[in-house]
Each structure stands twice: as structure tokens, then as C-alpha cells.
Image 1 (tube, rainbow, N blue to C red):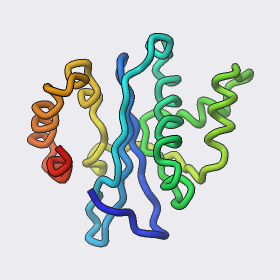
Image 2 (image 1 turned 120 degrees about the vertical axis):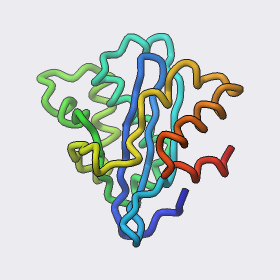
Image 3 (image 1 turned 180 degrees about the horizontal axis):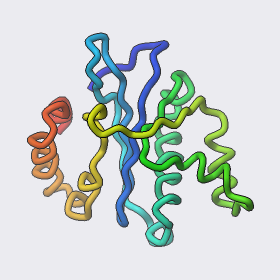
Image 4 (image 1 turned 45 degrees about the horizontal axis):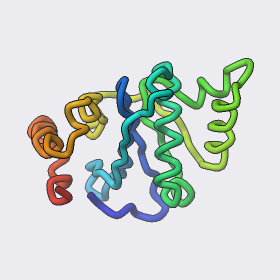
Length: 161
């Protein structure tokens, strides 16, 4: 993990499953290699388990904005996604209380959505990172090691375990 450079934009990747959500904040270094800055995740509550996939993506972005607010306020953000949760919120003819509240929360940040291109995004979160088997603390280490074998660029996460 690296400390973000001031003035450079940050990239945020979202991932969600039927039981958990997570986000990865990354920044391209001077050498052109993208490195992780911060990683957040959590399990979904009973009510959130019934959200549609797009709503889970919106929830992931809102959760990341709450946990990483200081980064969101001080940097321009590139949201690297397959589907655009902000566009989903903006194009809804009528917003329910929850969706309207999320849109209002996200409106204070400088977020630009960019389509995810797999070959150029080595740090894209895999949904398997948030699978139910990872939730238990004993299994987390084994799963992270598996992910590290799959993507060597994440080796900096080992130091945190």
C-alpha cells in the first residue's frame, strides 16, 4: 500500500456479492504502476441482502465515501466500474428515500465514472474477495494468500496481515 500523492487522481474499484461489499482505492505511481491506497469491505445486513445488484454497487460507493471521506474530498476520483451506479441514480425517474439520500451524499465529491477495461486494471477487485468463506477471520489469511498468488501486485497487503 502507498500513501496517495497530492494532486493526482485516485481510482476506486467496487465489488459486491450477495453477502458482502467492498471497495479498493488505488493510485498510479510515478513508474506508471497502479498501487493500492486503501481497502474497505463489510458484510451486508439482512435488509441489504435483498438489494438489486445495481443498488449494492451504489451502497458500496456510499460506504466507501463514508469510510474514505478524507480521500474523496481531497482528490479527484475515477470510478472504475462495469456499470455506472451514479448514472443509475441520476436516470431514475423517481428516487426513493434511500436512493435520494445516497445521491445527495455523493454529490459533494468530484467523481467521474470510467468503464472498466480488464487488461489495464490489475487491481480490479474480484467478487471472490468478498465471498462468505472469507468472512471468518481464520479463513481470511488463506484467501488473501490465494488472491496474492493470483495477482502478485497485491503483495503489499501481506504486510497488513
